[in-house]
Image 1 (cartoon, rainbow, N blue to C red):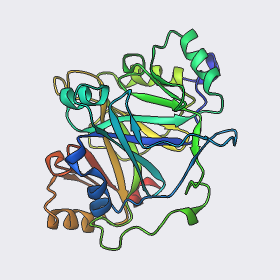
Image 2: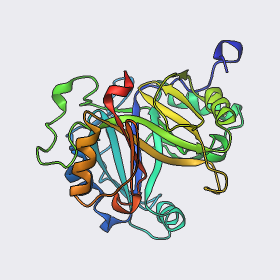
Image 3: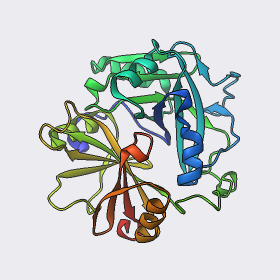
Length: 295
């Protein structure tokens, strides 16, 4: 899997641009993320990576995809909620087919059009091109089942550049100190999926992260985010797909107690790891890990 022995991948990822959640407008994802996880809104404009002002006043509504968007931050992880405002639009069709929950991920790149050109030359199918919004998606069939957006826009007030941009988390949030540990792609063959992603993006394998006993995983660092490739249970899923994300917390026992008190069931526990019931988390599969185990 050494990238030194193959052509350079076409994508040199910068900052993780956002975790995308798909929802219906009435789902209340933003309120839930703030109340339960302590997410906050950051007042931030957009610019191109090269420092050029984005210059596009947007209402947060994309008529092409039939979605309204809203941005929050969980620590230094940007989360974008895509609410389907048109049941027949692209997002409405996605929610109708797969239900609400995890939708896609995105990274920034320095050269938007060069990246798009190199991907096409590598026979990667490009879809959902938004020239005005300066982003495009790659077909998940070509990206091991992970729906990936590429963009050359960044936040003007990014907490990863200056922590003072991040407001304090709500003091009454159910969970305190939550941060992204990894994103999980459930796949039939983690090694094959790792080869696909490594051929597309510059990655580094991360050894030693905690996982459930007997679970086959490969963890890849993609700039500032870890993507976990986990072997899915035979027959559990009909396809390789973005299945869950894991949050680290300072005290897992306290977090599980707080979640249970808030009516969010903890379905499984192993040493340092836990799973909550997706019926209690707006359709999102969320794993939890003790921060101390991340080194």
